[in-house]
Length: 316
Image 1 (cartoon, one colour):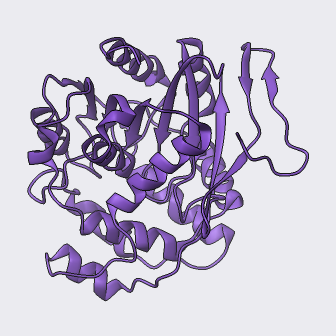
Image 2 (image 1 turned 60 degrees about the vertical axis):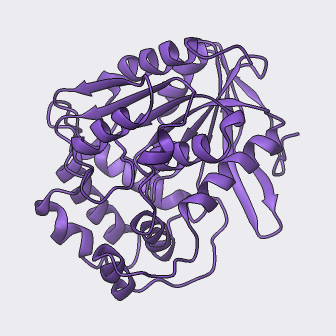
């Protein structure tokens, strides 16, 4: 059963006829609580949405979640560990360790992609969900792929969005991003907002640009829900130390769709192509003008792709 914080109850979004829970806490381990939220009818097909590096669950736009719920999904979005309102983990990661890992030197990470995948499965256990459709963005796609490999019976279908296999020769970052990636952000809300605005301006979809006000509002909401610079470093090291999953992805039998923007500077489209090649029978959907974000103009594209992939799954 769901764990509620005080004075939190389910509510119905009257304008869209979709039930939306408050933000809930799942104690999945003695030292780890995951913050999550649900949309839709629990009797519908469960769909777990997994976000990327440093991204809280609110980066899965609420309207996108409602659209998915209207298409027959019981939608669950959550904050990964070290993100938003989920627990912070121990272990400090310095820039030297990141540089060494980026160069291919063996580095001990506080936790791995397998651990992050285990969190997703533990949340399903908490919800009493035996198997679910999984959709992940960027690092979230890596987590979803890892769950599909490690716990195939828990996965009905896979949607890997703007992600990659972990192989170093695909899915690279554009060199123009390097200064922003290694820059030291100042302390405080305003410094975070400025840094975030700059990054989204660099990696957002050129064909579907956000306004300055939209970028700022997103950054402010993210900061106010809780950010952890050390947590982002821990997640980054998990990404840099992950294995190449391609050989093991070839054994995945769940239907899959791979969505990638042709203008993605954060994860080059080669990462999406490699993922689609590795997943048997996967649909590859390449989107002109899409960068490393999920513009509202493409919500129906994402929903349709996830729905038709789920329709290919065997009944649970």
